[in-house]
Every structure is written in C-alpha cells, then in structure tokens.
Length: 507
Ligand SMILES: Nc1ncnc2c1ncn2[C@@H]1O[C@H](COP(=O)(O)OP(=O)(O)OP(=O)(O)O)[C@@H](O)[C@H]1O
Image (cartoon, rainbow, N blue to C red; front, side, top):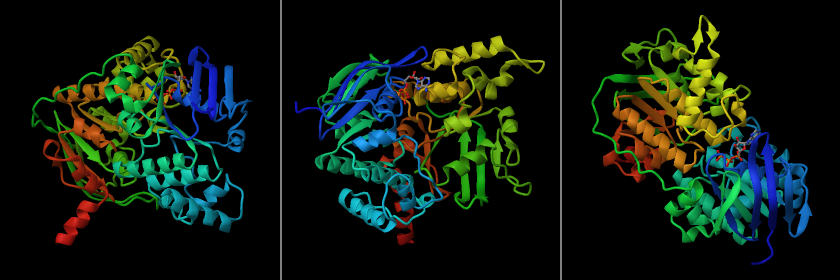
C-alpha cells in the first residue's frame, strides 16, 4: 500500500464511563473513499471529531502525511487540509451563499463568487452564489457546505451521513461529485448507515462495534448482509409481514385544509386531505422543505387553526383543529417529531425527566408530584425494550448518540399505547439493525389496530411499512397510492413534481 494520508494508532476516548473509542487503528489511503460503518453509538462521530480537532483523544496518535499531529481545533485541522461536513448543516439562513462562505474563507467577494462558480462547474456542484440560503433546497445547501469545504483546499473530506437528507435523485449526483473529487486527489471519509451506498461508492470500509475496530474490508467484496453481520454481530431480522387491512375507524382525518403561515420562509399548504384508519399505516413521502414541518405542526397541535376554521382536522372523530398538543394527546394521540433535540427531547435533562414530558399521564406522578420510582422504571423499560445504548436512566439526553436518542423517543411514544401514532422520520440516523426493529414494531402495532401516520424521506422505508403513500410537493398532497400497486419510480416522479407537470401537459 502507498503511504497512508492519515494514520491513527491506538486512539481511545472516553466520556465518563462510556468508552466511545478504544484502541482504534485506521489508515486512510490517498485518493480513496473510505467508509466508517457501525451501529448507533459505535463511536463513528467521536472518531471523526477527533480527526477534525473538535475533540482530543485520551490516548493514541494521529499521523498526517507521516507527521504526528495534535489538533487543538477545527481551524487547525482545516489549515492542515482536513475538512468536514456535519450531519446537521451550519449555514446562516438569512445570508446569501457567498456571505456564508466569507465566514470561513478569506478573499474578496467578487473572487469568491468566481471560485464558487468554477468549483460548481468542475465538480457538478452548481449553486447560485448570490442566492439566499433559506431559498435553497436541502440538496443545494449540502452543495454549499461541500463547496465551502473545498475552498479550504482539503486533502481529506469527512462527510457524516451525507445522504440522509437527500432525495434519491440527488444521491447519484453527490456520488459522481465524490468520485470526481477522489480522482482529483482528495480522500473522503464517509459515514453512512446505507450499506448499498457504501458498496456503490467506497473502496475501503472500517467497521466499528462498541468503540473498537472489528473489521477492515473492501465493501465491494461483501454483500449488504455480510456487512450488517460484521456491524451488529448477528443476522438481520426479517421484515414483519403485514396482515390484511382492517378497514377500521377513522382515527385521523384531514379535509381540504388550507394554511397560510405568517412566517415568510414557511411553506403554505393548500387543499390537504388524508385519512388514517385504525389498523393502517399511511406514509407521506416528499423531499423535506415541501411543507412537512408545517403539516406536522398542524397535526401535532403545535400550530392551531383559527376558531373560524372548523371541520378541517379530526382525531378519533373529534374536530381538533383548535386544540393544543396536550388536548390532542389526551384523546390518544402520540407524536415523534423530526427534530429530536429541539422538540422530541430536552438535551440538558435526564432520560427520566424526558420520559415525564409525555408519559406523565401513565401514573408517573401522584398528587401533582413526580413518582420517581415509577418514572425510573418506565425509563428503564424503554431503554431495555428499544435497546437504547446508554449508561442508564439518569444519563442526559444530549449525551446519547443521535440514533440512540431517536430509539428512546420512538420507544417512549409507543409505550403510551396511543390510538393514533404520528412518526416523522422514524429511523433517521438509526442503524440498520435498530431501524428494522423499529419498523417491525410499527407493523406489529398496526396489526393490533393502531392507526399510524409516517412522514419519511426514505422511499424504501415507506414501501416496507405503509399500506398507502401520499406525496407532499410544494404544499399540496397527492391522492393516496396503494403501496403494493405502486413502483418507487412513480413516487419519485411525484416527489420532484414531474408527475404534476406531466399531468398539466396532458390536460
Ligand atoms: N459529549 C458526550 N458526552 C457523553 N457521552 C458521549 C458524548 N458524545 C458521545 N458520547 C457517547 O459515546 C458513544 C459513541 O457515540 P458516537 O456519537 O460517536 O456514536 P456514532 O457511532 O456516531 O452513533 P450514531 O450512528 O448514532 O450517530 C455513545 O455511547 C455516546 O452516548
């Protein structure tokens, strides 16, 4: 092998009792796309933060082009030629693309604009440098992040789950860009839970389990099942078969709902209609930014309709448009929001207190006081049933890895035994073993008669779970499509508006 660009030896990092990385060795070759694979909490993000200088290792060495480094900050890492695009974007929405770039890259505005255009042309990352960021799609924002990283001239680019926010059509485009970058001399460290993607694009893969390296392979020589086994140490469970539909009672009905938000950046909704019956799963597909947040807030009760807008949203047969979130929950509604740190959990609070946020009606308080023993028992049960990897119920929610926090929130809401469950992005950032466990659980609940509404950007997930799929595009919802009679490409066309354009052309 040619001398590695980056070479880690015996890297260890602990957070209190948690040993996030233990004796990790990793060699990244020049001009390679190298995957880091592992379950939620396996230590992938920690390792990337150590390489990018966000955190410092307790033990071990980092060698960069043969020279031992100790990186005190990301700015220092960037000066050496290491760049990173985080899972959650860090752009200012009210600034333009070039203004965001100026925050990190020195230079005259006119020169930077030229460079953005040139990089866009060279790497298929076209984006208007003068566009306001709030007006860009998620895919375009990601391009801006990557361009901004490339302008610091990195030799190593770290991408943390770059495809989780992209529609299927954009993933192929991103991969072309990454290949072009590699051929131009950049190495890429790529974290993803999607094994097919890793097999399509990566030349090496390092597998982590519980903070240790358990394998170094060429992912093209192993099928997705093999890789999954190395990651989770056992075979994947089979999907849960869905029983025939029950045609049960309508637990959620939305009828011709129009909504004009006050916020100029929000998406107006027009003529939204949908029905979810007991014993059914309805999926809403669509690229994020097409009205998902607005629709979610109207269903959860975070946004209430004005008094005069009656007969638009019904839950368990009641007109709930003007009800707040708590009143809707009292009817038997539970909700897993997309934004797990802002809305699903309070990061500074323990898991026990986070359980209380929504599960307090389950006898976790008595005479207005918290019943600590019961709250702890509920939380422990959730941790056990949903395989949440954490030291215990007193851990702060913010210290959990992203996927483990998601498992906790989904578990907490399911344990409320609602009649109507609404889950936005059920397996976002969750590893494949845990994702399949969550999906099996949702199908089992449906079979027992729960009504379930799922919003997801992952078509595969919707196809595995749902009886019907409707597509949200520019604030309008398509008619329901019966999943088993529909092909993913057809949903894909609705997602990019090609279906409505074709329909208009025919009209
Ligand atoms: N700041 C922190 N404080 C305490 N514990 C932490 C902190 N950051 C990470 N951990 C713990 O370290 C372990 C590894 O977490 P890490 O985020 O690296 O996992 P990951 O493999 O990236 O997971 P995911 O796929 O869910 O993003 C987890 O048990 C996590 O709870």
